[in-house]
Image 1 (cartoon, rainbow, N blue to C red):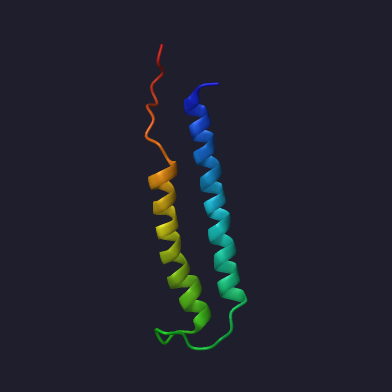
Image 2: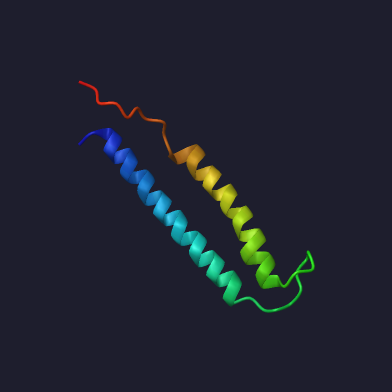
Length: 78
């Protein structure tokens, strides 16, 4: 099998995993955290699900792209 396909398959699986991690993190923070007031003055569920989870997820995505994704040529080689 062409190594480009293996790398593309790995990247697709990582992307799907990141999607599920974000969805689960958002759901947990939005629905299972109390209504207390957070550090910024918003309800805690809002701060976590709409501010902290996206910021953490941006950092996680940057890390995955930096260390796991590779720049591969898409042209066919003969």
